[in-house]
Amino acid sequence: MPSPHIRPHLRTLDLSDDATAAAVHRIGLAAYAVEAELIGFDGIPALRESLPELRAQDLRWVGAVAEGGELAGFLAWEEEPDGGIGIDRLCVAPAFFRRGVASLLLRHALAELFPGRPVQVTTGAANTPAVRLYEALGFVRGADFSPAPGLVMASFSRPTAGRPPGRRTRPGTS
Image 1 (tube, one colour):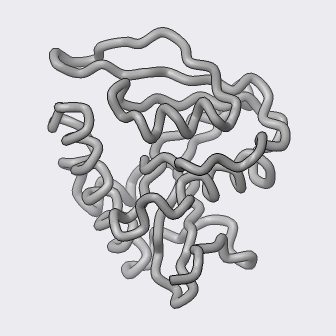
Image 2 (cartoon, one colour):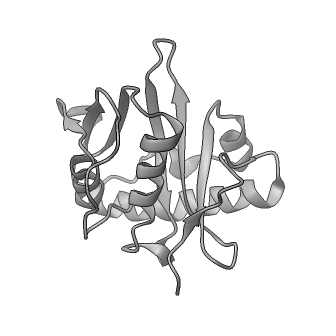
Image 3 (cartoon, one colour):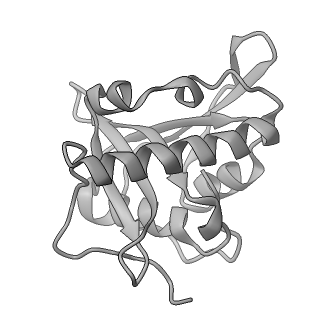
């Protein structure tokens, strides 16, 4: 199957479109279910998020689509008042794991959507594919923290997001 690509004419996904919102919701649930297994914690808030709750998020969205138009993954972020970016979620449909979708989305966002801006993101500390991805793209790991019993999160920052470094062979999954 050909590699997914960013639709050149579509910078953000429109979650007011029913089919798009349903695809994003379905992919998010599937991706977070895998992360829950990886980190040993099934209380990830997005796992219990309804479609209306997802649509109500004040986020911007970009998607990677496979050649046939199927959504393979997405990245959602918020713009901080100080000009920084907070990545809220980076999810890949399990059928597209290990194909570079997360790397493609993150590289595109860093280079084209918010170049030169500080970026923050968190992930489960035991989510090794995501941790490797963020480190490979120049994010610096900050202090781990525990927002709930049984959950350890890793925080990452990228003070300035210029052109991402070279391509890795083991992309992250969420």
